[in-house]
Length: 148
Image (cartoon, rainbow, N blue to C red):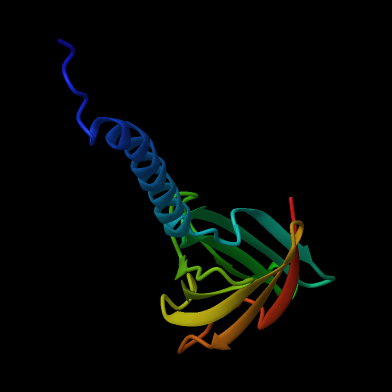
């Protein structure tokens, strides 16, 4: 005498694959929606005019932007630069747009200011001061920098 197959045995095997496939699809959608892409501001950036030289060294990890600056004005008579390469004078948080608002510390006055850094393309950014630091400082108000 042959045992009767359960009426759930066939349904369970086929339905199990569907449920597993549905769970895998849901997990993939959740993981892709959790990944945020950010405009990458990392790099060494430079701009120069007849009397001014301006350098930014930026590092970005996920949305966190940090780095340092060196501004030389009036043909070298005024400098606003970090003392050590490891000093951090610029911090900000990118929010998936072409611009990031940063806080910077003037190395001349040791006072904070705010600026936006806008990525124009992969080789060009624009620096624009929003709030000037109190006291004397020598960072340019606005400048377009090229990637080194």
